[in-house]
Length: 246
Image (cartoon, rainbow, N blue to C red; front, side):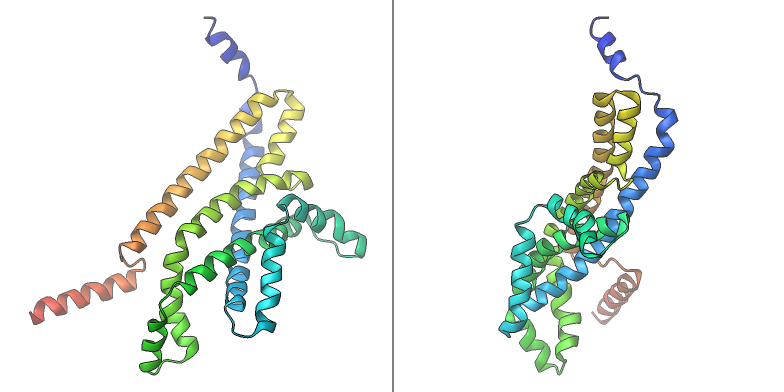
């Protein structure tokens, strides 16, 4: 009885009354995560290509950007974007400011992952593609990039999960995501320990399956299993033709 009584006293928040708020906060968190990751991946790939360019005038801005945003805290970027820029006449909504902050921060790290992956492709791949008469754009899009994405997948997966957790920092600008909802519930119920334990459990319940799914995707790609139905169909057709010919 002495063990269960403190545990029963710990969980006294009427969670049924706040389920809708938590659901909205979780959806908002996922929206921030997806929008920010897509933007960061696109910007990170552009920065990686700039850093691999032979021209110094192209490499230098990307290098400066990467080094600056890798060594500035994400919280500082959020504050500058949402609280600092309005002082010079640039105002963003909470959602845009949050997404922009996450994009700027994570693009720097993703650019390093993409740059290392692209640079890790053997130069013979380029030479073979050119020998077949493929142009530079076709060679990059159909030969280099698919192999580079395979190499970049482990680091990219880690960044995605880390970005999902980092959306909690947007509580500082009242972004209405999961941690902001938790803060409001804690202020209403005065049950901070219970509230934040439950929120931590929700983050784990979201992040762990996502990380495991991404790990499965990584293993599937490394095993050479096609992901699209079209490629699987062509692969089965090729196997059938090989067996018929033998």
